Amino acid sequence: MFSNIPPYDGDPILSLQETYALDPRADRVNLSIGFYYDEDGRLPVLRSVLDAHSALGTTHLGRGYLPMSGDPAYCSAVRPLVFGDDCEACVDGRVATIQTLGGSGALKVGADFLFSAWPRSRVCISDPTWDNHRAIFEGAGFEVEAYPYFDSATGAVDFAGMIAFIGALPAHSIVVLHPCCHNPTGADPTPAQWDELIALMAARRLIAFFDMAYQGFARGIDEDRYAVRAAADAGMSFVVSQSFSKTFALYAQRCGSLSVVCASSEEAQRSLGHLQRMVRRNYSSPPSYGSRLIEHVLSDDSLRTAWFDEVAGMRARMARMRGRLHEALTADAKDGDWGFLLQQNGMFSYAPALGRHALALRNDFGVYILESGRICIAGLTSGNVAHVARAFAEVASAG
Ligand code: LMR
Image (cartoon, rainbow, N blue to C red; front, side, top):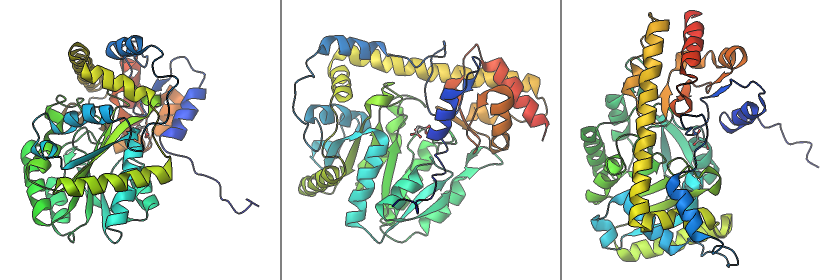
């Protein structure tokens, strides 16, 4: 009956993680999947989350389904992180927000929602982008193409190329943007570039879909929402997905949100209804425990402050590790230009030249990076950075 089903090629991130998990070498280093490891090489349990867990006890047991759009208290708690406390669109009731199954769930529901409204629009994703973007939007029914994003000569954003491409798109095209910590490159537009891009998109009546999975890992929780807030302040209608997997270290709880910013509160109400419809036909309603933890942290002043501090600590550790890797590589591989490591932001750096050696790095040194050349900086520790630098230097010298 199923003999016609072709084999699955596997996923460049999640399937590699399965290979990593089976690797028996004690000194293997995981720089592939987007996990934040602490200085001891462990996935942390945040203090703020632990306190919320103690406070909640067993109160989450013996409850019914959450509504299709999730826990309203969670939605109210997470929305100000995305838009800021004083965002006019939120105050006016023009933003429909639902709880989602992580960032991927938000992207899927958002893609289905947009396809129901604009089925003939094309979706444009950055070149390169997170490996799952194309699959999610094509899976929703869209035609997907890529806009220029990364300048491999400078390791920075090819802003001129991006603007030229986006500026020529027909009205109602959907443009997927990473407001901070671009995945996989770690190269972000500046605030002035965001302003220019948003003005262009508003003038051309394009639909922005902001995918925000690393808020707080570039410059700060407030600073990293710059692009989203600028789009809201420009009066645009757009979509934002949010993930808490990394910033709350709650990967397996699948916590995220999806917000649709509308022209009126009446339009937001109707949009909310359609988001509910999309949820119902995909998975009915989200799970509740992770979202209760997050809602508890965000609604308690001292836990909220503690969480902001913990995110700042993660951000600072990743920046230190960039510096340490750069320093070690500059010593071990003098011929290479490793400056991009310092220039890029957040969890990832991007070195396609190293990606060509991903298999050798894995087999010969136990160092896992993606074949695209994406390196998860958050997997570096004081204990493994010298080994990683030696491995990178050795494969780089092989050409
Ligand atoms: C990643 O980019 O590594 C993470 O977001 C995990 C995933 O789902 O791909």
